[in-house]
Image (cartoon, rainbow, N blue to C red; front, side, top):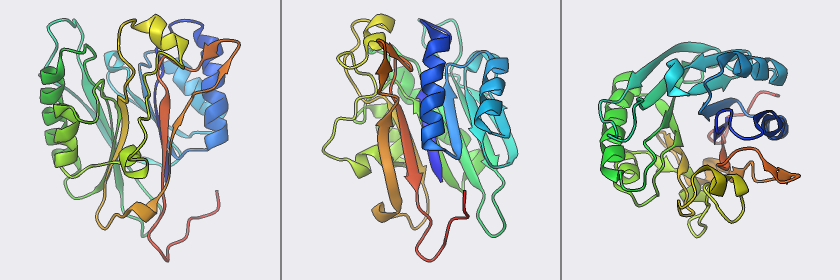
Length: 257
C-alpha cells in the first residue's frame, strides 16, 4: 500500500504549471491513495483523477479543501468540522474520513486527512483540534488499521503531534529516518514557501501516521519527502509532500499492479 500526501497550495501562483509537476511525480510514484489539502476546485481534481487513472474521488466539505483519490473502492466516508477554531480564521478546519473496501480476505483500511490551523502561536488550538480528530477516528475506525495524514502546521515535538502519537499512531517518517529533519516547509529549498508565508521557520509539518496491529519497522518499505524538484524556478507547491509505502506481513504477496 503506497500513500501520498500533499498540500497543493490551492490555485495560487502559476498553479497550472505547478500541477504539471504534481502529476509528473504522481505518475512516477504510482500510489494507491493520495490525500490532498487545499483543493477547492473539485472539477479540476476529478479531471486530474481521470488523467491519472484513479477511479474513486472523495471530497470533504467544499470549504475544507480536503480530498482523497483512491485506486480501491470506497465503502463509506464522512467529514467532521472541528469545534476548536482559531480566532484569526473566519473558516473552519476539518478531518475527512474514508474507508476502503479491499480485495477478498484483506482487512478494511480507514484513512483520515486533515489540515490544522497554521499560525505559529496557535499550538493550543491545534492541540484541541487533534483531540477532536482522535475522537472522530475512534468513532469511525476504533478497531481498524488506520492512516492519518495531512498538513498539521506543527512540528513533531508539539502538543498536537504528541497527542496523536500517544493515541497509538506511528510517525512513519520519524521511524524510518530518526536522524533526519525532513523539512516539508523549507524556505531555503522552496522559493514558494517564502513567497507564501514569509517568516515561517523551516519545519517538518506534513505527516503520514499509521496505526496497525502487529506493525514493525521492517514493514515500512519507503518513506520519502517528494515534490522537491523544480522546473524553471517553479515548484509543485509551497509545501513538499510525503510518500509512504507499507509492505504486507511476511508470507503475503501483493497482486501485480
